[in-house]
Length: 115
Length: 111
Image (cartoon, rainbow over all chains, first blue to last red; front, top):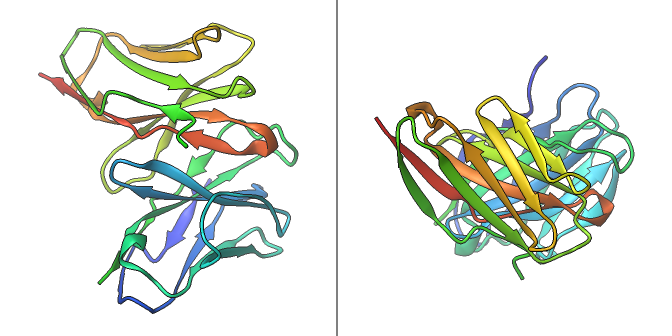
């Protein structure tokens, strides 16, 4: 069973640009969540999608957005990049359709560097 | 506001001894707790979990303890092995299937 796949793995952007990251969940998983990891901050929750609908949203500015497609693949977009957006962006999928999803399975992450 | 806290950024333990990683939380509505392990350049991998209705869960060398009154959980690794060296994150599930993570503890097991 293939794991969670994130692309690209590494990317470098400059301030003011925008970026789109992609995540393919485990087959059959309908919930996809995104997290930002920075040193000293742990994993900060960005948003969760289930059946193409954003179900939860963390405390991030509107520059951070996402979407989910009918095949459960998800993308997140960050517009007007700032230096502080440099981080590892992790995608995670979970199996249950309702609120019983107990375990998140993570991808390897997309390492974004903003210069 | 950090609802899940890991106050020890790092921990070093001799091989064969016990590793104890701690985690505190503030929200009494959390109903499920998990530990994840993360190696460099990889995503976190699920290690062990515990429901809020239990106080202990064991899986091989790994045991998680939950003290709801103290809002504290801990992960015990016995015996510790060099391959256990990684960053460990605790996480808690809140309402709406949202998970809250701690800042991580870097464990080094010394051979």
